[in-house]
Image (tube, rainbow, N blue to C red; front, side):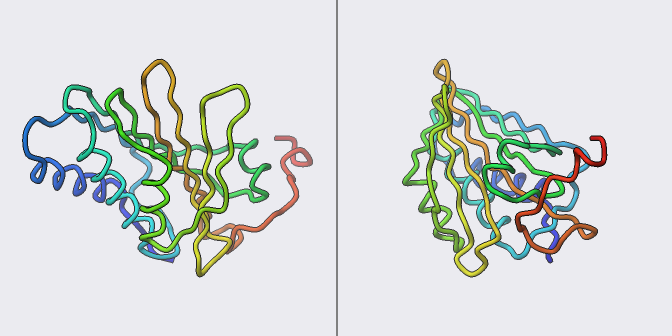
Length: 185
């Protein structure tokens, strides 16, 4: 299990975009949760995907519209965990949002394919404009990343949701019963 410093990866992607984009650039506002110094991940695919996704998103965005990038820890996404059939220790949410984003499902699929993940499915989220994509590693079917696209009131939101298992938890993402009710949680 490798450790990925997503804060550094994000800074590098933003700096590369700022250097390489010709002409006006959108303002980029970044919020990082302070408790996310190192993220455990099986290999470098997470680092490669985040770097490429941020770079391409910023490079193709409208220069007149600000972009917000936020990385935070989510402890419980019960509906998503139940839908997917696995219960990670926690989830990481990388959100990129703004009025000027130009992201489409085929672009996301290409970025995932470049790091060895294939689309398992795209599903609509009931009563919303959101689309949820489940991507599994080609060489490790239990290793997944989730991607959500949503547009509301002309603001486009992209969420990369990463299931994280820490060292004290089970070694792979597998279905397990929900024991939180028995523990009184």
